[in-house]
Amino acid sequence: MIALKPIRTSPIAAAFAATALTAAAGHAIAADTDITPQITVSATGTADIAPDMAVIGLTVLREADTAREALDANTEAMAEVLAAMQAEGIAERDLQTSNFNIQPRYVYPEPKDGVRPAPRIVGYQVSNSLTVRVRDLDRLGAILDQSVTLGVNQGGGISFTNDDPSAAITEARTKAMKAAISKAGTLTEAAGIGLGRILSISEQSSEPRPMPVARAAMMEMAADAAPVPVAAGENTYRVSVNVTFELAQ
Image (cartoon, rainbow, N blue to C red; front, side, top):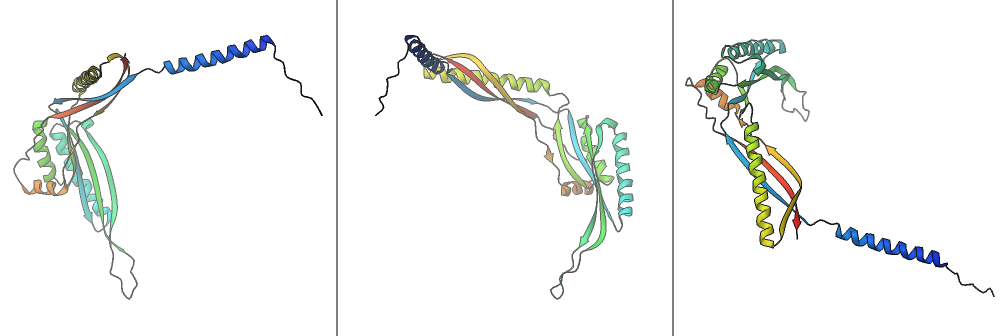
């Protein structure tokens, strides 16, 4: 039978181990106390401003038996539209081709004796879209009316915007931040604790959405000789902020 001898630890090693355990425990306690009490609040600020510019989408669609005929008809109509826009004082930098498309038109015959015949091409469509920035809103109705008279038969949308909305965005941002500080102060006061320094700030902003103009509405404009009524209204710019504060206890 083999007798096991007890392992002896030197006083120096024992002291070193005790010191390490004490340091580890102290580090754990310090880590727990390093957590900063905090509160995060969200707020939104808005600013309204009258638009000074409109962006419109104008599309010319032409159909013919051949692609060549459809393209020629579309080119002629779009050339007249471009010339009219320039005559209205629209600068070249405010005119941009946004889409051009050529596609066949198919007819799908009814099945006979359980067999479906192959589709046939019966013509072609050519569409050409133009994005126009109108900086004189007083001319917008007349421009829409004239473009339809010259052959525009599809519309994308009207977006009333501002050439430089930075002042409105700054106002909305300031309102959002003040609202966040006020909300945090109300919450902490009700809880009986103090509000400390700001730890982080983030924001999200949004701009006004364009208003769609359907193809049917464009066709009605062509049939009506009266000027197209346009109401620009106001643009509302929104800024939302998320602010994290330290809690002072």
